Length: 247
Image (cartoon, rainbow, N blue to C red; front, side):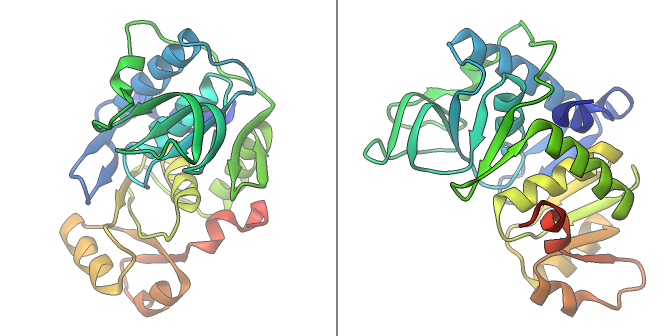
């Protein structure tokens, strides 16, 4: 399986069950909606001229829209660049962009933004059935490029090391988008539900854990160490999510 196929794998059995819930916006992304949006947006990107290896700036905060944006680009054969500036064929943003620093040909936005087209315009009736097996997939921090096969292999290893079950409710209180994306990838391979916290705080995590009956929380070290000792909640330092990638 490819990287994105691994993340999609639980969709046939999980269907309309929630995959990602964004506390900040209230949006809930189901497994079936994830597959539908990714494969149709990928087809839309291809229709608009995206070619294999083209760079796409992705300036989207961690939440329900980030995995859709990144995996749509990857499924279409593009390279998702997690940045708000630079040169690329396309850009996907949440609500705004600065044309003085983002040198792009086309911009798509999840929310209305001057000079940008709605991301929804990419989602038509046609789907892109197959994604790439190899080649570059994502660029992090402007310098680190990760390939499809490396991301897929690392995700399999991560799943065997940090075991997550389909019944788990996982609080994501991580500090930056790529770590959050990898956590969503990992949880979705198992069919779990990720709750994206508004901010990585001890109080916020405890409140969310109680409200959502969470079974696991992934947070920065200083937050994670203060959450240890809960008899029900598994606590994981966010660095464990990306350490095997050298980050």
